[in-house]
Length: 249
Ligand code: HPA
Image (cartoon, rainbow, N blue to C red; front, side, top):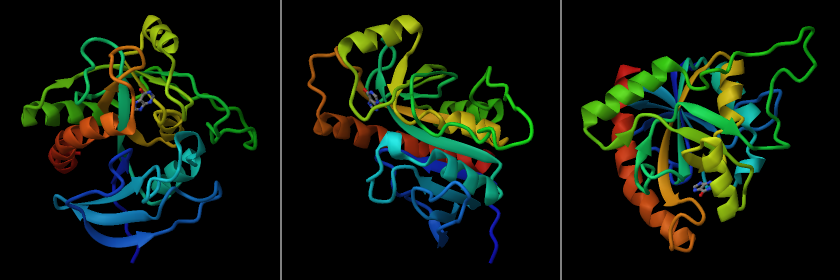
């Protein structure tokens, strides 16, 4: 059966599986950009048909700089998706961005390098420049804000997302620089995912969950355990937010 769900959820760290999804079909797509991170998981979620794609793979083995962002986004477009909600784990930089806080970012600064970052790679017969003034789509962003307000969870309604290359975490001087640049949060997977979505005309926005203070912003040594404690606690709210937003998208 050919399924054409309009909504996709891209899961990040900690969200390799989507609780509450009734799986209807799981399918590896073929794209001319190679393999997606995992099969596309088609299912029913809060009575909507959606497709779920964990960007690090189902067993979380793909590091941020190795993710085939082009294949992932292209496969979602091919599947008929209109709107994408991306979940991203991030570090907090500015004061309001404490661990476990949910943010709906409104801007991006891209520090990544060497990633396949465009579909317009010169093989087309004309040059294309997308408008990326507002990198997150207002429809999806506004629905996320509405859902967070309805849910009554504490959240930050805007944040500048600094996308770093990884996989290492930053130095404290790098975090200071990101703050001077205007970044509120830092993560490794926000780009080129957002701009590739825009190139394909997908409506894309992100739910960012703060799982640690950025390097040098607390006395805590950044270990996987520290991240995991905040991640597990914060993801409870992220999942509630997904339950709230999917039916209204
Ligand atoms: N830096 C970059 N990416 C991240 C961080 C961080 O501190 N936390 C989660 N993803």
